[in-house]
Length: 214
Image 1 (cartoon, rainbow, N blue to C red):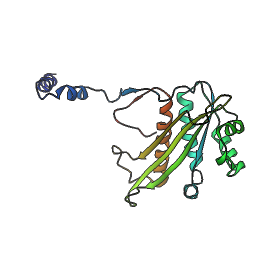
Image 2 (cartoon, one colour):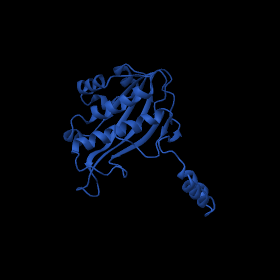
Image 3 (tube, rainbow, N blue to C red):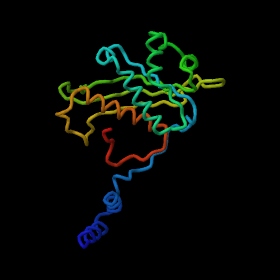
Image 4 (cartoon, rainbow, N blue to C red):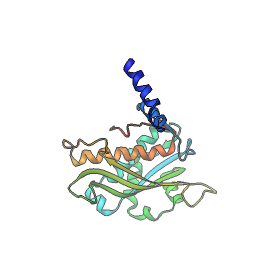
């Protein structure tokens, strides 16, 4: 107790930035900081998560679209209990049955085919376990654009919300990967991509320690 009081007095009597340092010193990293949703109007609507990936990505992992769709759908169902998420297997069947036709469909047609009110479209830009600058460095990385479209009468043709998400595993804080396979690295990166995407749509607390493995 005396040692803690001594530390407190030293901090309060030191440089002008002591206030900021003191706040950080006594911050509980488990509590986190509140973060508001960037888009909070999904409500109880039916939402389909539709993932696009280029041929190179699908050659490396034929299930890349399904994995990302599963991760996002899981997180949205978990944190938006009023929303109705179209099962990822139904979305996958639609993509496979329609071939490449679905890629040219506009949001209203996609909603009609998938029987939903909103489409969350994700275009994968990176899906790899190799860093771009140093190929010998193993690191799971998923990067993609996220666009949310409304359907129905009077709906806008452009996205009502758009952003870009990047997820890396390991993060700077998580560096021990020697015992992990490439598949395990991608699984963790995809899970964190799903978490980061879903968090754009609900209020939450963000841990000061950074993302945790699921």
